[in-house]
Image (cartoon, rainbow, N blue to C red; front, side, top):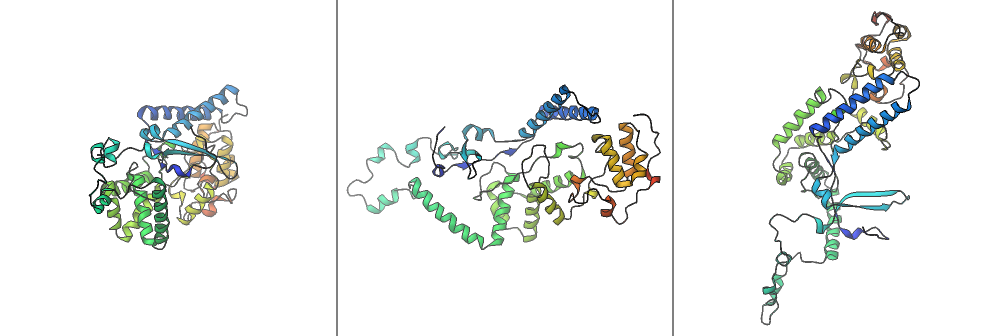
Length: 391
């Protein structure tokens, strides 16, 4: 560890980023077990007014396990962990800022075929050193023997910084080329996560969400994305040739590829301790612009929704979607029966919970106001004829 009074800009570190990884079979099995235990515990205690301390502790332990598996799904590559480090500093507002995945130049992996001996790497040996600059040697020959990139670190940084600003200015006036450069970087991140063939200092990730709910990985939305991914993967050349391939793409194909890469980076997953502010509002804005209609992607079912909420929430949902009279007929049912009855009552209504709506505004108003033109209207006759056993 080293301490600096000022931020160490001169370190010239390369940045490595964590990559999305699939959990092993054992990890997936353990995660599914923890999720099943959590769901079972919730189903058992969700209707109780008071929960014992030991049950609360069990909830906390299961939540910790699920959070751990979430962290395991995104990790640095082992080689980056072995050679990387971090910088801890204070931001302008006094908050602690941690930058991980920094790799010093001397710790970077040497290029394949690079000489092991430092003297050889510098282009000379002890035997030849005595001959350099001998009297009578042609001056042009001496100049040619000095490598063009054999400059000091400070001068190299100075010149490359000037070139960076110059390229930024030129690229800012070429939106079509900038779009291709952006697409190139996104393709490398998504299809070649360990490739380093881009000079753009940005990264894109594809958060793994398939394991958050049963059936997501095999659902129509996931299968559509899998088909798109396979289609692009079959067309892509090696990572080192992607730039030339993208430069040759027609504008329409380029737009399709860019849209796919950007789409995979979308994440609206709400975690209990997620500190990202503005995510929900930004998601609403994007969903509205994309004309996302979750009624075409999701339906309230007993297993997928009503068994996972309290009885009070179940009745409130039926009341909101179908009215007080229909909800009254479900009172007194046991939890499993109520969930099934609620699914039957809401069939065809296209009701959505607030988290799936574009905006929370009007969540307490009539949900049918946003329904399809051919939406069936809930009526007392739509409620199932269930027997109200004692709960």
